[in-house]
Length: 163
Image 1 (spheres, rainbow, N blue to C red):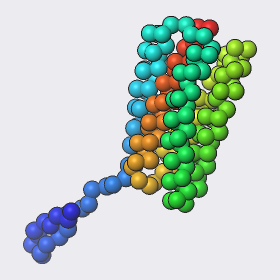
Image 2: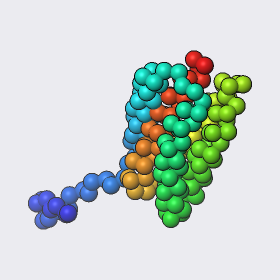
Image 3: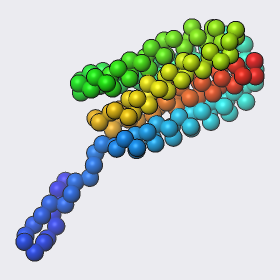
């Protein structure tokens, strides 16, 4: 919708509102959603107590699957926009999601190794949020991925730390 402003020289168009986020705004939305997800995961870990490894896997599986689904949508949108760097960042996130279950199996022998997959997943999300210049829906999708990953990382990470 265009608005007109009456000036001395005639009608002038009002400046249009921005439709896309700036880089700082994209990172703020991502980090805020991730913080909320981490709080939910931490609260869930405290509420459920110590769980067996098979129960942790059953909790993480649907969350990681939903995060992978959102990541594939983000990856296809990045390819459609010909944003190759953003597509590479989304690919890094996919790789981290696929590596997470295998790394979690080895976390009992090396608890510090557990944080490699969530760290790599967050790195991919931060890279994507830093380079994306397209539609805002991808920013919200990446923020949802951040919240899901933070929730599972906090929930499982607390179990690894207290393990």
